[in-house]
Image (tube, rainbow, N blue to C red):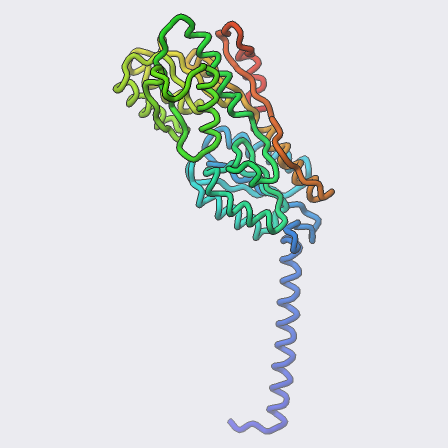
Length: 346
């Protein structure tokens, strides 16, 4: 069809108007989106909402479930927006790196993280901090520790030392044959608890009383397998150190299958409600109780202080540890399971 010059001018004018309308629409959508997003400092303040991210090692371990609950409660109290993520398994560094990147892109003001790999996570943390995001480690320090702005955690070496001293006192006058059911290489919290137990017992890794060492990943099924392996290697084991209570309960299952559950001393760390019930029932002799709700709540409050007052948390804050047992040992301070159940993971 032939177009006149006048028709062509009208079409161009209409096209220009349409383009302008599209541009205005696009700008309007962008403004609407940014109201829920972040400014250049990642504050998320365009809408007045402070955004906080929580990244745990996994979303299945009861310890981290409780930590998430603590963060949710604190976020509700503080009136902030909480986003959460977790590794697919204990040790999943790549999943945590992706979570950090996604949270920074979403405009969080601060990230709370329990590192799966204390060293490998550091570059991602550094990138987040370079963009103005406050990063606080919970429970587990990074390597180096100052790769994060702050650390809110149990003194994990002390936690190990308490159960080590307890086991030594309970085994007084007996030759110990110790199985060490550890976490996994490269995870600071596991090494700290391991080292603390040995320190509390007054030995080192080369001591002949340490007859077996196995990694469990903090998992109950793997704890059972590890204990089975240790019993094959050293049937006379009479003391079992475990990285956490799921591993301890796995060890108990393996010992019970051999009829050894009553003559082996199992000690552990965490002090969750299930673990404390296991102490009350006699399946675990003692556990060092820590307080993930406190860690998470303090972390959320620190991010709020940073967002509102530009005050950065720094250094290490000890969130406490208590030995829980119903069979106390001379010279080792402890609370009973009534206290432990009242305060489990408080």
